[in-house]
Image (cartoon, rainbow, N blue to C red):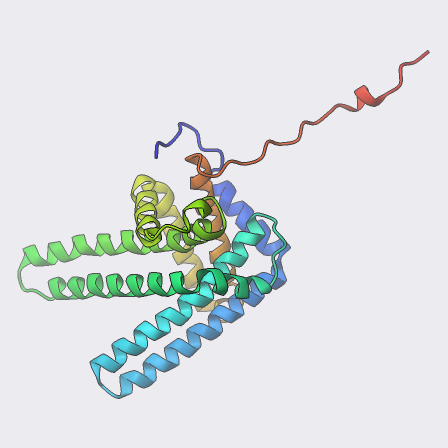
Length: 262
């Protein structure tokens, strides 16, 4: 992919579009946030119960199950946000459509995401606990790798939706869909570091604000974040020419419709 000199949609315009869609479709934004929050609470309770057994395998198993449940709900949120962004009659029925079209793909993607995140986090903890300065420095380097990976994760579900329903739908019959989604998310992250860093920073700040406000975590967190990630991902795909926007209608001056004066 070659990046053109001037992208058609900027970072802040995409953010403004996401905020506008969240306001225009406030009811759907609240509903998707509540569904994701309910899944989050269920997963947190399940992991907490497993932790009381003090068995590592039980905790890891429940962690993977909880991550899969969260991922399935999140894919529905992202698909609903995609329908909002494309003005394609969004409704809560989008969750059922997303689960039919993305169910198994979301499950595999969630397993990979959880495994990679756990491995990187374990390595960070291992190196930072070392008495050697070199090992601690290496742990900090791996911490940056974790931040890059988490940023790539933000792109992965919008890319998955584009793969099945949008710009990459012609590739959905190919078996390499997982490799393509992972590869493209990393390319978007590394190839657009300022853009990706701004996306990660704003989402992190929004999550902290919603967590502190308590009510915001249930009502606005997931709905807005899903819209923001969809708009940002589509902004990059438009700048790379993957998504081609329809031409804007030509504005005809009123003078051309006036009858000539006698």
